[in-house]
Image (cartoon, rainbow, N blue to C red; front, side):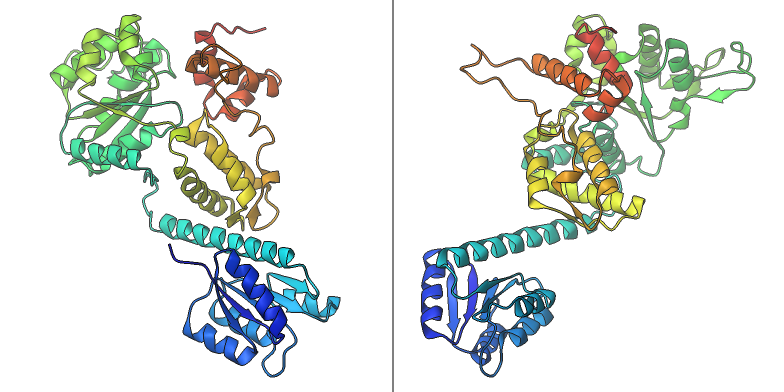
Length: 453
């Protein structure tokens, strides 16, 4: 690992020696110069991570060194050292772009801490610049953003199966990006020039679900004043994505199975079927095998759909992706809201990275959208994140608190109840805080036996 390089310029030999010794003890590679001329010469020969320079020196003074650094190395912080502890000289240096100033006589421990803080700021800024560069290279709005090795292996598998027409089940918690992965498969398939159509199977009643998926003929029922093609026909030549497929009513599952087997669709009220060429990708946040055993999903439909299963990991299991996603979302919302927000403070990023995200990427998106809307300048700080962010973190019970870790279901139920409490019982607000839609929240409450009070 390359040592951090610091350029130290001071015309007082004792100060130069003492400060150089302190910084070297921290593991930094220090280049010590006794005047501004030799300091600028070193600056032109090599790259440095930090510059500490005396303000008042004969010949080239600290202000000239500062101007040179700002002009040619704008990302390198400069700490100004002055034996003339006047407010005017300090303010002038700060206005010119100095990171901080040290007034002689200063404690060496103070100098060490200021140098550490300056280097940490530079490290964070450089990481942010790297993240921004990577984000700028992601031109496709449906790109799955990740640097996690497990996710990269998953995407490689998705690319391999994209070339076939096999049915795929995408499994993952709410908000993990199941539709994005489905779009990714579509974009890498031979059907990329065809349509991509998405349908949420849990959002509609039995009759409406059948009408949406299969279409209907004029006069098929009261209000059917003209023919309507269904989503299968709309997706002809492309891909149909069925989200939460286990929520489909049984009668619709039977019709769906026939469509998959026969490659034809019969509109409601029609006599003659219509041939179709559609690839089906299904998604669920439930274990489909358990749904079959519980009688919620037909066994034959399960085997027809579940040729290949891809499991998306929750965001808490790929925390290295959080900074990358946070900056991608920051840029997205800054553009759509026409806001100048460009940075996330280290403190805010730490809170974002440490949170457990029961709502996954959708919940992170809510946090960043809120932060961009509230931020008063170019920086998203902790004060613009939800106050409940830390409080809603899901934690496994400590061994001394329980004989065994709480189950995931117990943790989820406790988390949902906490969100409801913070939302004052307002289910729409609780769903927003959790990063899920109201229908999903209603199903979870029903699952855990939570009823209206």
